[in-house]
Image (tube, rainbow, N blue to C red; front, side, top):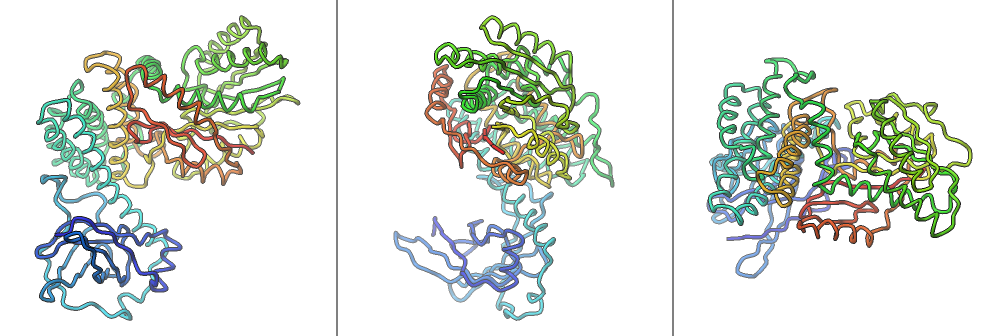
Length: 561
């Protein structure tokens, strides 16, 4: 029986199929999805198309490779797919597939779940001709794009489950032998519950939530702890569902943690997780490079570094500027920092501390506060003096401005572009939590936050109160927002670095590659020296990405006008 396959589509697709590729961004790659009775393999394209598509694959058997012809046909009406493979005795294997993004067969089997295909479908004896009227009608572009999104969400289901399974297997090494099986069962319950919620099946969802609450322990293994946060999110979403309407967009009073709990959790997250310090490190290094040889410098902090007290990031920048002045002899006439945030009193308190700290080092610092959200900012709100070199820092902020209309984010980026900064440093979560379908977002978030909770498990003991506070009052708040909220209430709209690259380019910014890999490795060595060696660095098209065991968590990029 074959164990490894490599599939490649022929390079002569039909005309309407080619146009679908161009307009819908389809891929012709294929993948193995299961085993058929009497046949070594069953294959389907990664992104299905509505056309005859001749395929070839190489089947490895007894160390030898041989090519076989495989012919695939998809009906003009998704989601029904039919796959034919000529095998022994000229038998054909039929395959029916339902590519629903919200409701699929539960996953009780191992290693992951039973496929959502019926292998008992009657054999297909013949294929429709290429000129069949069912295939000649060219689908509309919007249909292509919509179906692509459906299949993309379906693909996320496979990849995310496998990734979470890897995390659980890692846990099983240090825990009881049964933890891996229990963890896999927990994954199955979570996904089944998410599907029930997506289908507005209140009875089934409530039943699964009841079982999940007894398994997803807040102080259990790392995966049980992250699962408890998703259970809270699913429960909140179920409570907001209307039988025939949309998910409520108003967050209930019991969903969010108190502001003082959030503030404490944010401070603890800064201390025990390297993700925010990583952003500060990259931003300060990039800003220092932009300020080289300048005497009047100005920094605009969008969001004032998440409202962290004491101005952690800018204290380190002030240290570096003071050291540069004393060693290089470069005169530094003035440093200005403009903080943007929702609380003027908090901003002024931070500003007073920074001015006092800078004065103790002989640095002339002026602090200005702008009380505003990012959407309402205008260039006239900023005081930019002639001769100043401007740098802008955005630390885990701009994803909150991403809306369905995209207009709000475009306005913010255009406003920043009008300020003409020498450098804009953008630090964002590197994950896709803003997809069009709930189930896809759920799976992406489950994979992403499983890695984060795994990193916390490596740093802090199970019963450390700091760990519980960071998990339940910081990361759990993000998870619940992604899972339970829709519309304007959903603000945790994290996106991949590639998506940010396209957005920034459309706004008129040009990439400024970060060239500090050696410095970054030295910084990471100090982090890993503290007793945790699972953090990794990667350089991706000029961006620096910090991850946990190669899973991307946070990405930093630099831009210029």
